[in-house]
Length: 86
Image 1 (cartoon, helix red, strand yellow):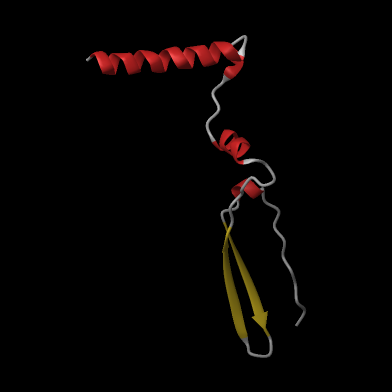
Image 2 (cartoon, rainbow, N blue to C red):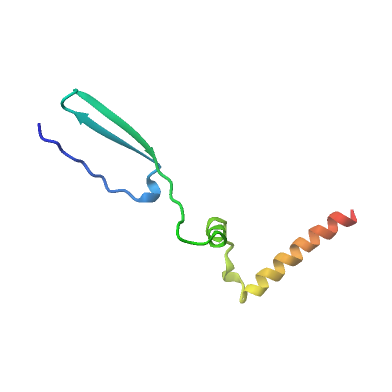
């Protein structure tokens, strides 16, 4: 019996679990292995990982990053003061 490998091309983002079957001729048994797949960022600092893994807002509506930062600060300051005064 000829051993035959079957390869299926898929995108890594589509793979969550992989199953591997191996037939042992001597024992007449099939080995079954199940693997879970995760994609993790490697080779970058912890602070960069946090930025990559968070939902980054769409900054295209701002001319400068300071506009986003100032809006964020004023928004949080408003709710902070509102909670203190009430």
